[in-house]
Structures are given as structure tokens and as C-alpha cells.
Image (cartoon, rainbow, N blue to C red; front, side, top):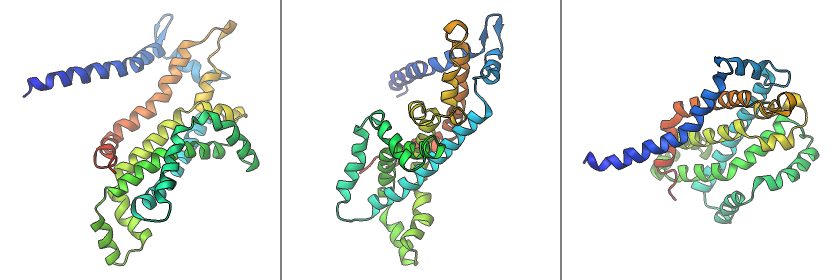
Length: 265
């Protein structure tokens, strides 16, 4: 029996090495200097005039928090409605929501930039967060709809017999039951908003509004137009650390969100 698992272990190990190699190489390159190893690249990343500052990091934190919060709020109510209520046009509306995935978001960024101008949200972290929430909704609503649909109907019926309203049932019964789905949605929203580059590049104009990704790219050019690869690698590692830590802390709920019925229906 154990011998039959050898190919799986070998395949898993090979895939792990394949995916980990770029991260290990980036970490190695970020501490390599002309004289050996040290933190000079990180010092240059944060101390350079056009480098990464605390403001840039805070901007990324604000955008990520707003995106995660907005995505969870809309996806939870949307997924609950699609998964538990029957109303005219429900399936058509759900399919239209999923159809957004077929539209490359880069093709509508200019239109969204104009729309944000009409709303007075151009060059703002709030406007950027709203756009990122929009991009996250198709997958998030799909995930939450199937998470709610996987919860036994008897739990909801028992709560209503005890006098709970639909909102009370959602808060007290359903949300704890779909926690893995919520974690999965939140993690995806954070990873996307924290590392997003193209949307901030188009929607943000002021340097004091730049996120960390834009700040890292802005300092990529060193003297005589050469690329400062060492500082870039330091920036890559700095941005990857929060993602790796969150994934390590939430991996059980994340995996459960995909395996405990979240993709059924």
C-alpha cells in the first residue's frame, strides 16, 4: 500500500520544488551583494528617494482591507440570495455574474477610470478598491453561493422555527457554517489586491497614493538606465512575505473551502 503512494510523493515533491524554486531564488538574490551577503538591498529599497516608504505600505494595506471587506460583504449577501432563495431570473443573473470572468479586466479599465471620474473617485484608494472588488465578485459569489448551498436545509429551518429572521439565520447559523468559504474568498481578495499592479497603474496618478507594487517598479531603474535587480528582488520578497504568512495560517480553512462541498452544485 505504501509502495503505491511513492509516485504521488515523487510527483508532489517535484511540483513543490518547481513552485518553490522562484521564491527561494528571489530570497537568495535579495540578500546577495557584491561583497557577499547582507541586507543592503533592503536598505536601498526602503531608503531610496523613489523607493518604498511607509505611506506606500499603508496604501496597500488600506486597499487590501477595503477590497477584502467589500468582497466579503457583497459576496456573502449575493451568495446567500443565490444559494437559498428562489426568485425570477435567478439562474440567468447568476450566469451573467459568472460571464464577467470571460471579459479581460484590462479592456474595461479605461471605462472604469472615466466612471470613477464621474463619481468623484478618480485617483483615490477607495475608487481603486471598488474596482478590485468588482473584479473579485464573479469567483467570490460563485464560491459563497455553493458554500451556502452545501449547508443542510434543516439547520436553516430549525433556526426559523425558533423565530430567527432571514438575516438572523444568516448571521447566527449560516456564516459559522460557511467559514471555510469566507476564508477562501478573503484570502483570494487579499492576494489579488495586495499584489495588483495594472489597475493601480491606470487608476492612480499621485505618487503619495501609490501602492507598494507601484513603488517597487518605480525604483527599478538605477544609474545609467540599468535595472537594479537586487532591489527588485528585495521588493518581491517583501511583498511575498504577508501572502505566505496568511496562507500558512489559513491553509486548513482554505483547503476545506474547496473540499467540503464548496464546489458542489
